[in-house]
Length: 401
Image 1 (cartoon, rainbow, N blue to C red):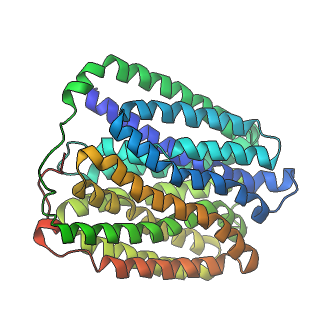
Image 2 (image 1 turned 45 degrees about the vertical axis):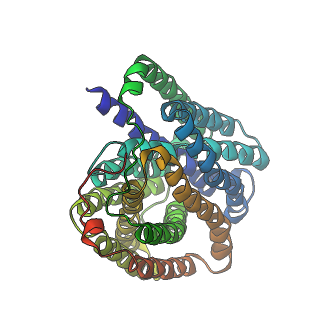
C-alpha cells in the first residue's frame, strides 16, 4: 500500500471513530441507563449537550492549530484524546461524571472535521468522490455506534461500549504517530506552498454568495442530521415493536439504515464532480423534505423502509458542502474554513439535543419529523441561490492549494 493510500486509510478510520464515539451515549441512554439510573430518556440526553457544544466551539482552535502547527500532529491528538475520554465515560457512575466525560469526547472529536477533511482534499482536483468515501466511513461510524452498543449492552454491559473502542482509538493514535514520524521529512517536502492565485472561478461576490449558502444549509442540515441520527434507536424502539424486541435488534436495524444510506454519498460525490452542484443539492433537499414528511405517522416495516429513504437523502447532503468549501478555500486557511463550516454544524447539533427532548416529551416523534420536513424545504430555498455559472458548476481545475 502506498503512503498516500495508508494516510487516506487513517483519515477514513478517524472519521469512523469521530461519529462512532459521539453516538454511543445515545443508544446507552435509550436502552440501558434510563432503567439502570432511574431516569427518563428526556432527562438523560441533555447530559450529552455540553459535548456537542464543545464539538462545535473547539473546531475553531483545532483548525487554527492545524494550519499554524501541524495537521498530522492534531490527528495524533485526536485519536489518543478521544480514546482516553471514552475510557473516562466507561468508568462513570453518575450523570454528572458521564456528562463531563462526554464533554471531553466532544473537545477531541472537534479536531477531526477541520483537520481531516482539509487533508482529504489537499492537492486533489476532483474532491467529490474522495470526500464521499471519507463520508461513508463517518456514517458507518454512526451506523456501528447503534449496532455495537446494542450488542455490548446485551452481552457485556454498557460500560464496555465506551471502554473497548476507547482502547482501540488510543492504539490507533500510537500507530499513526509512528507512521507520521517515519515520514516527517517526506511530509515536509511534499506539503504544497501557499498559492497566490485567486480561487478558480470565484469572484468576490460569488465567494460571499456561496459561503452564505454553505453556512445557511450547514446550520439547517446540522439540525436534520443530528435529529435523525441521534433519535433513530429510540424511534425504532417505539415504532418497530413487532420487529425489534431487544437492544441488539434495535441496533441492528439502525445499522442497516445507516449503512445503506451511507452509500448515497458516493453517488452524490460522483454527481457533484460531473454535474451542477445546484441541481444535485436541490434534489437532495426535496427528497429529504418528502420522506421526512411521510415518516410522521408510520410504524412497522413501512417505517423501516422510509427511514432508509430519508437517511439516504440526509447523508447525501454531507459531501456537497464539503466540496464547496474545498473548491473555494486556499490550502493555507482551508482547515479554518472547514472549522467555520463545522462550528455552525456542531453548534446546531448541540442545540438539537434539548430540542429533541422537548419535542419528544411534549408531542412525540411525529411532531419532530414534521419540523424536520419544513427544515429540509428551507434548505431547498437556500440552494436556489447557488450560482449557475459554468465556471462554478462545472469546475474541473485543481482546487486552490
